[in-house]
Length: 182
Image (cartoon, rainbow, N blue to C red; front, side, top):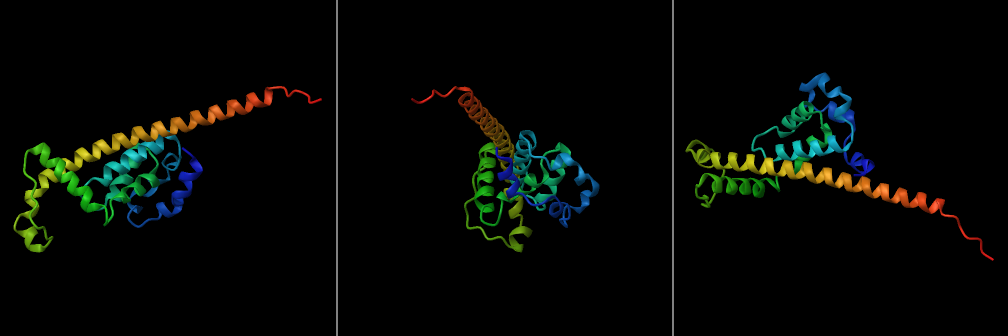
């Protein structure tokens, strides 16, 4: 994995450290390991970020930061990956998680016209979808974090092996004597 490419996508350390929602972690965010880019910190950050992205609760960034600090993985990448869930992707992602949850719990998918309102919340609409949504979210979060972790480790390893091969070929080409032209 090219470190420069990943580094160019990530915000500066000070910007993340001074984020208003992440100030609660105080001096814990000054651990140098939270900012390193190596295969373990990046793959761990993908696992944390993808897991938290599927969790159906607010302040996912704060929970991703807490998990990154706990597991000592790249903090900015963990927090940035949470933004996979955004206003455009939340409906399909959480409907998929709800569908997975209904498959596991044996409930039927409620496809009635949905309108998020105070009346819907007060009359128990959330109680009907909450258990399958939470179970499906946990399953999707676990599967996506394991796949993300493994895929990043594999891509990083592949990239390193390719660089070794290219270096070996360059050295071999430099050692090969050139034939004099007559």
